[in-house]
Image 1 (cartoon, one colour):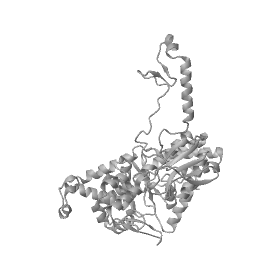
Image 2: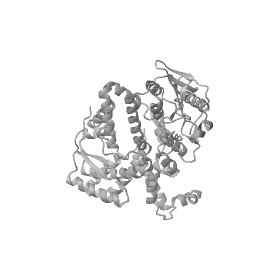
Image 3: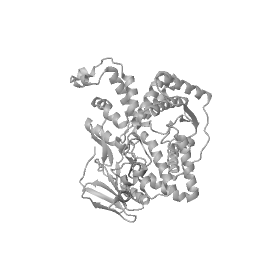
Image 4: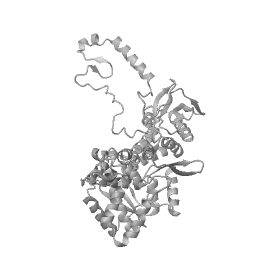
Length: 510
């Protein structure tokens, strides 16, 4: 069990470093919430990291498992957390007490980059800025449910909810997916229909003639019949599966509350998954700028260079978001400083002229601030990853070779590299699932659809998720997807999991 501990305030020397780093960050135009740094030991930092960056969360066994994993990694020298910061107003960040003073300078500069990104990037604009208080409230609510209904019962329900926490619609906070229903008590001027009873406006003495009771009764019966037949059926495919379950699943009051908590937290964390490359690249850009120009004393140089090299090191098996993000921001700044963009530059086919192109536009700094404000990882890579950048950075696409048992280079072609990056960034690399029918076969069964884009569902993941969905829906659940053999339907009825062929035409989404 993870227990809350009291964190230590900054020492006078560290407080002076914070003042300096904050001043340098502000001088470059970074705009951030008030930032509070707290000093913690390794166990405290691992506990906060296990909670997703928060000092307090609701009780659940997975947080303890994550704490054990982080603690063992730190004890064996396999990993070390250097910085942790919360998207909140004020922002809270944590400094590891055992770090050297050089590390504290670097971490503070890095944190101010994150804080600026949290405050100004559009994809974070709809997040709860008081989430540290909300997380504590969530913990208290779930503890009350555990006291009343039992720890094991509530934890099992949380397990089921967590298995579908990715089945939300992260774009729905910016657009309206469905028209809002008009209130039956909305008597706006000019409306002919009064509320939901179908009556037309009429003076009292004319009401029985304009609104015949027998006609109104027949219309009311038709409406009620249509409502009964459409219960649980979305008018169009619904990507927010958790919201559909909240509105239609047979949940008790405490289950509704728990699922709404899991969904709220999923929406809070969603922008972090959508902007991992940009966020880390932006923070790395600014800690590099601030440290090399202001923060590195001669005695700090070796330590700073060593830790930066470790942060930006490449890997043969996965992408380093710090490295790709900071290099893309630097490339954008350089291109806009030199004017290497636009129709005239793109039309130039002389390689030497393109290499020496320089209009001295000096617009690089303004451009990267604009990019930081409006883009997420998907649009960032799609818009600014160029052939020249891939060549300079020696980027390639790689995949797992089942014959050799190793990850190997598959292609150095620019199109293949960019396509794989965009594929992995779409919906954070997870399958897009949506509800298509809540009354499948007119038996109250739940039918989901996998918007197939080239990657099959993992059979074990799909089976376990359907089992959990069945617990939430209390009726058979199905999902339409695609295998090598064609379209199939995966089903679980509470006792048996099966896979059957589907006569639905296979479609691909880009």
